[in-house]
Length: 396
Ligand SMILES: Nc1nc2c(ncn2[C@@H]2O[C@H](COP(=O)(O)OP(=O)(O)OP(=O)(O)O)[C@@H](O)[C@H]2O)c(=O)[nH]1
Image 1 (cartoon, helix red, strand yellow):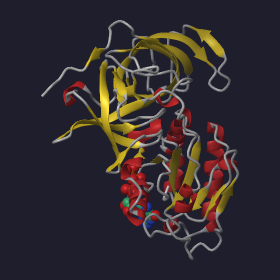
Image 2 (tube, helix red, strand yellow; image 1 turned 180 degrees about the vertical axis):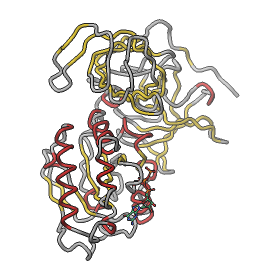
Image 3 (spheres, helix red, strand yellow; image 1 turned 45 degrees about the vertical axis):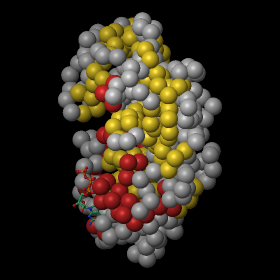
Image 4 (cartoon, helix red, strand yellow; image 1 turned 90 degrees about the vertical axis):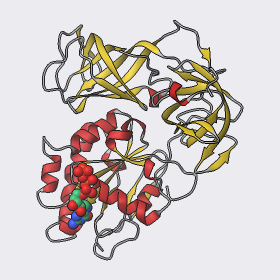
């Protein structure tokens, strides 16, 4: 991550007050080069991260509260796993507040406990690095501390290669960027759209697959607009080609800012262009719903950068959460802990894809009552071919 041009998107998760902001702030401050946008908190980025950084407090009482049934540590880790974030790093924070300070015994206790529940969720704890740190004093963040001589680094073996490190920065640096799909058609969910004086309309976002080049004709969905790319920028430098993982801004011809918005997806108009969907089928896990979920239930779905209310139009099958085997046809209700195949209908135009074809556009979190009530993976989509795309109108 510290090295230029390696793009790994990190999401910070953990119980309230575990030290997420402090740790992130310290890294950004010390390294200067880390892009704050890529170190976002869970709420904003889950669906797009390559690696989750789980912050667990080692302070007396705080670790116990964080991993208790009502704590957020397990829930966040489960959410990250279900949403496809397969690499996880655990920082055992606030080691300065352990009793006694910088206690190896306390670190070992936290490692044992957290490994246990990560295993239950589905992670292989032998591939998860644990680093004892203090986000507050900076121990083991950037440079190895003298205060914990018992910690000589954490080595893990992964299929993609080994990684090791004594400090959090070293461990982050050794993370392997996911194999991104350059050869696939372009998919670029828009994060924002700006109007820049003297330049024009500039959408920004992260390329999830394919290549973006100046001169290319883009299709935007669900806006159903086509437009030509004039220029591309990343970190204030012009690019002749932008690749998966790149966060870019690009200037397009003849489209007014008001015609595009966050949640729209850009693709190559000539190669499997994106399209909005009239409905889609997904496997969901109900996480946190206090009551019963019935057909008609309509939470907001966060899928890539889109936030759209979607109706559970049909509860098709209830599934065994572990094996995926069918338990019941057309269940009447679903409750927390249940897994099911459901048909979802967005209440306004939305572009999503099956997880199989474009994974980052095929997983979502459903929110209601200010919390994540379900997570899901899209199995198939009904594309809306009803209306033809229009060429962008000229707005001055
Ligand atoms: N002593 C000590 N205090 C810490 C450390 N890390 C964080 N803190 C303190 O713990 C409190 C919470 O830290 P934050 O970084 O705000 O925690 P957070 O996880 O971002 O909190 P939320 O955004 O509320 O979830 C603050 O008062 C920090 O100063 C640490 O390593 N040692």
